[in-house]
Length: 175
Image 1 (cartoon, one colour):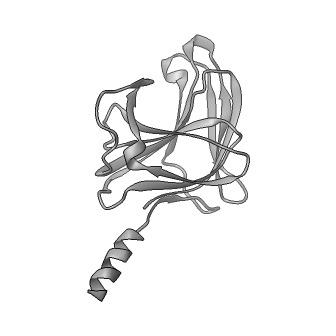
Image 2: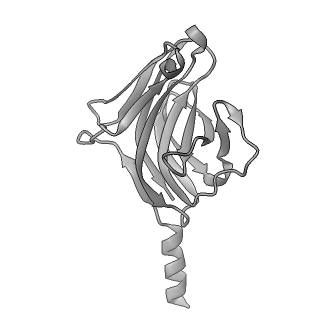
Image 3: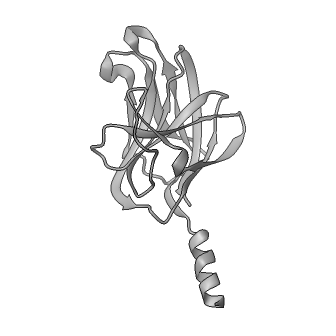
């Protein structure tokens, strides 16, 4: 019985790192996707700062029906059915952001969790079950994220106003 308890506790404490930013991180597989894909004029950047944190920053423009900027990270599909939530550490600018996940790279919709940042470091827990499905800003009538697998994660800002933004990212894990 004791070994079964230890096994169960070890499963409950299981954490997988999706990305842990540091000064040596290779961010070449992170891609900016702005509203320019639809004719908009928003402009996002992604880089590492001297402390090794990712910095997602830029300017949102509403010109030509624009209004969003995102940074996406695609990877080989991983099975995630033994996990139940994302753990992210971010420092924002007081604005609302979305954290998104896709089951497969070719999936059209994303599963979304919205969070509002403070100007301090925040550890945010995102239960898979609270990530709702949406496509091009429209909620879909299908179940929330089941957490079985993932192949892409995204941070997005699209607050329907012209504004500068900056989000620092320390890590993304699942637990």
